[in-house]
Image 1 (spheres, rainbow, N blue to C red):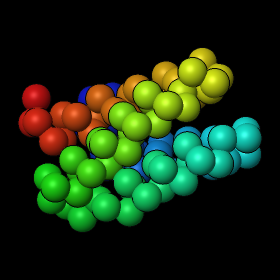
Image 2: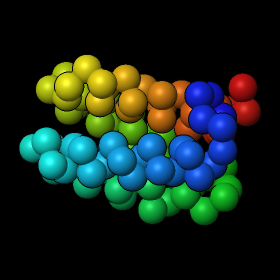
Image 3: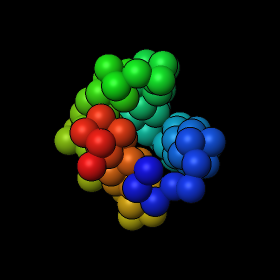
Image 4: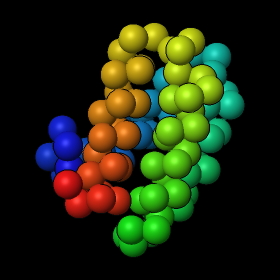
Length: 87
């Protein structure tokens, strides 16, 4: 995965970001990510659904995030993209 050493490290980064967004006043973004995260089932289809959720958040909500949260979201997006497209 992009900048993550393991799936567990990736999953923890996603959980941490969702918690930060929720606490930081971005409940809709956290909910969108949570919905996509629930789709992860080990298959490419699940990763693709999660990637779509990430991209929706980037397009609609991320401009209001703290810079570190935008950076975390982009790292998560890159890892999900790599999982979907195997690049």
